[in-house]
Image 1 (cartoon, rainbow, N blue to C red):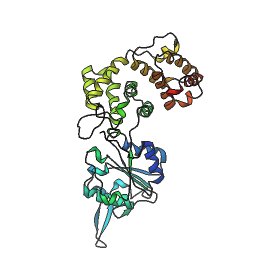
Image 2: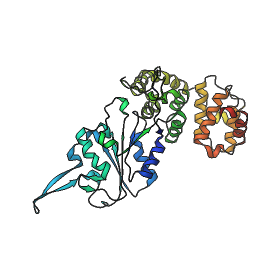
Image 3: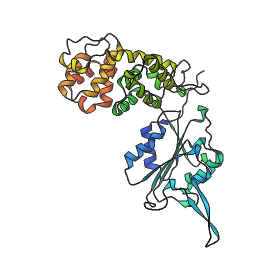
Image 4: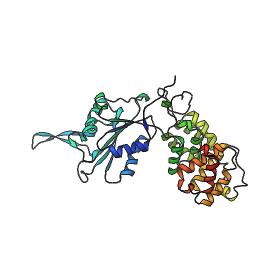
Length: 357
């Protein structure tokens, strides 16, 4: 029987909101499988909370005692004074500014270091030095079931909130990917292979060739590796077919690389959206679904006016599959709602195809 997780999970955005709302008093430890973007939450918090804080990243597995602080002899008093590491910005100008501290890969830190970090987690203290009032501390790591060496000390677990974070689904990841300029080739591949965003915790994923699976070494598809694959894809004109295939396999795994390479080959044959807008009723509709979706992604990126959107909808309505048409609607709803919500052609499509929305 497949393993199915009934654990309550949150998205990355929800995890960031939890930290912003409660993180000054509750230490949230965010756990998830590799590559879903946990570390990016520090940047998300900076965008949400502004410049009134120092944002501090701590790579826990590579830190030693002296990286956090040390007792230094005070020769005047003949005692030891605790000096916190400069990493925490607790001395000099801005020392009183509240901190937002990410303890990354916390559950992979050696046991001694977890004990040292515990005071920071529970008491907001770096050794004997308190953090400024209003400071936030949170941590990230992998699921214990991922089998990559994460373990939580028993006496700590009952004093923190362990938050399980889920992967973005394909449409949500594609909305983010569009904003940051990820190649349409990659976005199209994700849209047509949504299983690449599944989790082994979902159950019934034994035959999924793309995703991370505990105990099975090798490359796999994740939000992180898809973003990394954008580099060779965007420079494909300077790479041979073998070079591109080898690097994609080295980033995403062989199954995803073979599949995505077909999309790369097709991308040069896709008609430009400006050609569609010039003759939306007459231009040839590609037979291949991947080519159709790639043209849709280009349209989502470049359409600016209601007239342009209405013209492109004339082309979309000529696509034989309503399910493929629905991909364009989902793209517009997730990425260009301001343009789409007042468009009469979009509203008419919704009326006719409401069961697909």
